[in-house]
Length: 328
Ligand code: TRP
Image (cartoon, rainbow, N blue to C red):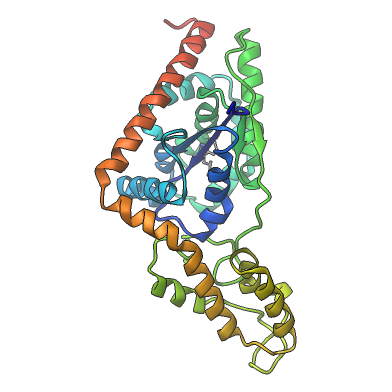
């Protein structure tokens, strides 16, 4: 079947994937494979911009590949590869930096956030982060980039950079990418307040055992107004209920919706049910993950093959880019 275009996305290797990664990104990446030619990149060079992500980089890169494959990325069709395995991206990054206004980069909300979070490590690479991201996207002549809304400023930057480059060098070598926001709900952590993430330790890792998963689920914060079992609850403000909507059969969701409001079901019971359904949903993922984890050579071979295919596309683009800027 003819595919509709090329999708590209980059994922930072920040350790084992959690439920937020799965619902917010992987699920969508897997679905896109049906209609698009997909290129998914584990961005290890981007990870080097922050010190925490630099630790265990190799292991985190491998773990992420394992998690993505287990989640359903199909490496026979999709190109799954590691950013640093395609050195052309750093060359393109340098060339694109010449059409990247410094003021625009330091004005980006994402840059300002990083400065706030890491005041002692405001490095040059951090300023160039969006330039490297642009290089990722355009190196593969990508049409669509599925990313969360937090990445919108970076996508806009990429589009402007493509226009500046093509205009300055009078070329059509680079393609302006479109952002593709998936309609995914913000996945909250077990604290029920903040977005699920490893740094806040409010996450539920996908690769936990069923028992460990149950323990994490039992720690989830429910409707804070519901103090006692006999108090009626409000599912509309309860993160456990929100998650039930994704993992629990419809009739049961409706039952919980009704029973919670009249104190017919307690939070402990409700969470036990959620843990069961979540564990059931994660079963195929865990089975595939265990199978792959037993064959690390296979995972490395997949990444090597992905890199080889990615380099072939990258080199075609770079020939056009070098010609446009009059480099040999
Ligand atoms: N900046 C993205 C993030 O933090 C990761 C990323 C790097 C990316 N390169 C990319 C996303 C290219 C999409 C396309 O999530």
